[in-house]
Image (tube, rainbow, N blue to C red; front, side, top):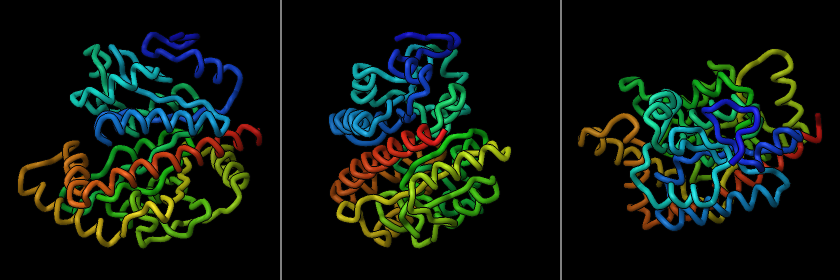
Length: 309
């Protein structure tokens, strides 16, 4: 690893450092999903396949995580394998970064923490299967993901398949509007729902040309906006799960979680794990599919945005 001109908090791989210096396309990736997403070794295989997909698209993958008290940008294969095979690596959001770095251990960065690190280095593209958002019942719980707040702080184009399935799509879109975060569906009318093609709610805008998407993101920032630019694209139809089935399961498991005293950061992995078990593992296959498809599109967008500068 080489740190180049970055401060002591960062350890930037030579591949990412060279790409930054040359102005080459880069796609940032989170690491909490490696630890707390798919089971081992599927999580490892999927993470490595994501890297291959991004490279095949002409961009450089920059998976971000905390290793030995430093923010690693461009995690090595051995570091990814260590995260994949160590389930007790903690999940680190943006609020946890300082404490985690001071403690000197490891941490899998969530969307919010990954955006903070990527934004610091000037990486313009981030790929994730599903963003955080507003939870069902947030009127009482105030359970709103820090991802949304972080989108308001960084000029990064975020490629995703909508919000995670345990979230309220209508309230998530409303909150994004409040924060001034554009949401554009690439070749899709409906806001996707992670495992499902549609959440039943429309994207505020649709664009069918990736060059137009890249230009829109640039213009959003050039006029002075400091927020992210959200690009949604759904899971492949043949790999998708019915939205009604998933939402019914999520609501049922959410009630069970509340009754069992589950809260905070434990809520999302608990519900997703329960839904996965109830669908006989179909969510794992859908998760892998959407991770690969969003990564491929993010690489294409990263290349297109660099070509337009």
